[in-house]
Length: 273
Image 1 (tube, rainbow, N blue to C red):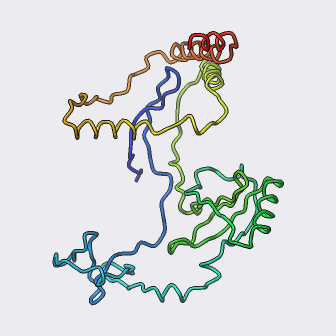
Image 2 (image 1 turned 90 degrees about the horizontal axis):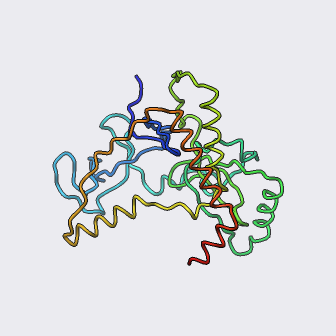
Image 3 (image 1 turned 180 degrees about the horizontal axis):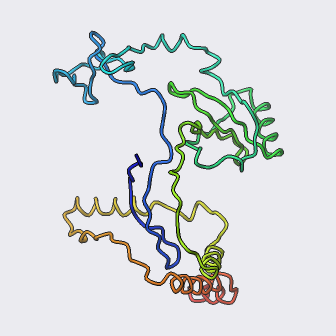
């Protein structure tokens, strides 16, 4: 059975639109724990109410538990975690060193900064410098919140960053689908030109969450009783002539590049301000 798409929309670059469907590429395989009543292990909802009777349960009566089979739970106590291998749970164990460009970004999950404890500055800096000068990253295993993660350890501006990663069996393989379409050489050349014209050095500071800003503005306006804009239908425009859209986009981005790179234009714009 083919997976269900979780989102539909359009990739746009220049005046070219590519309608697409989105599917999840990864899945978490960590153990999921439930809240249980400590006396009889009945499941407890997030609002601290028993799911079987609807009765309220005091927080001190709630324990964590794992569902070993449908409807059968095993409670997990703090001392159970203490029984595990201390070296396993308290260490970032580097298994290998690899080149960063060998790791598909699909595997990366969440980043953490690592700073040295007092007195550990020298070995910390030694590892940072060794990674910087060899261009390698450490592939490690670490236990965080009851899950053992695969992780990449790399230096960023003199600081060690640990990025948790998905295991291979958590990364879903794409469907074996052959995307059919006849591409003309002129279309591919135009598309490559458009990509080159829109290429810039990566600067994370130039990107921000405009959706969050607009949503906050809308919520504040709604709180003040202001009139809200009419909902848009969200229908993407259809590209009738792909070649024409590519040609027009390339010309437009060429003009944009000329404006950005022309010293005369930059100086004249400064005089206007």
